[in-house]
Amino acid sequence: MCIRKTEIIDGHATLPQGVTSVDEFTFHGCQNLRSVTIPSSVECIGHCAFEGCSALNSVTIPPSVTHIGQFAFLGCSSLSSVTIPSSVTNIELSAFKLCNALTSVTIPSTAEVDDSVFPKETTIVRLPPARMIAQEHLFFLGQSLLAYKRSRSRIFAWLERSQIRMGAYAPGGAARQRDRAADLNGAQAEVTAYVNGVPQCELRLYGDGQVQSIGLALSVEELEWLASEINDHLGKLRVQQPEES
Image (cartoon, rainbow, N blue to C red; front, side, top):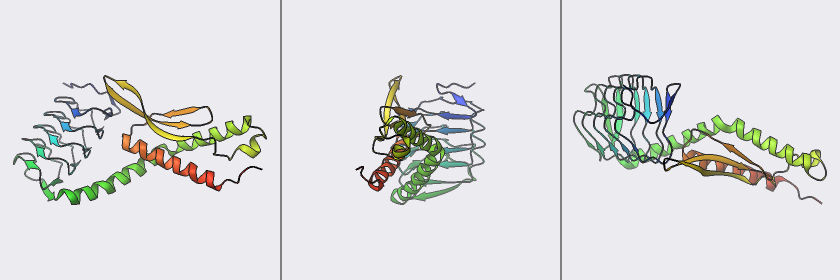
């Protein structure tokens, strides 16, 4: 039986930004779940949250999580990769038991870990939290670059549409105005709605009297990174453009 509040689409589930825990039994027995996005607002993964998700093959736990409850991933037989952050201080009884595809895992040396957490065949590497944080920063950079790659076509399309529209209606015509960026006001990651008290974020691109909203399955950090990249690019365009006479 699959007990859940989050929709699974094509084997993937995305928990909304703002939730602070993956509650107990959230995805219990969801055998069609292959991957999941856990937002950076989550602090705790409850017991049996992913128990019996036999198709789940990889999990990245964000660096906001401090606690992983008992039986959280019990019986996830396809789970071959799990990223546990330096922030985790406690992993309870049999959290990853019967995850027989998990050959190795890295955990912080300061975390309290029960002897039965991982299968006996799993190689456990313990690292100081400071060293893990350095690795996490590199991972975040890589994820941000992937997020940019996934969404850049839509962002560039917005830039082109905005510039053409502004040129078409501006004095002097499109030929002179098309390449101007002065009236593109930039991008911002914004909270656009609340669902059951949980804030929902999207990337908003502001132009000359128009707003293009892009809803992406990205964390707040990734959206803010994208917004900063767009704003930096617009700033460079403004510097490069000669002043009109």
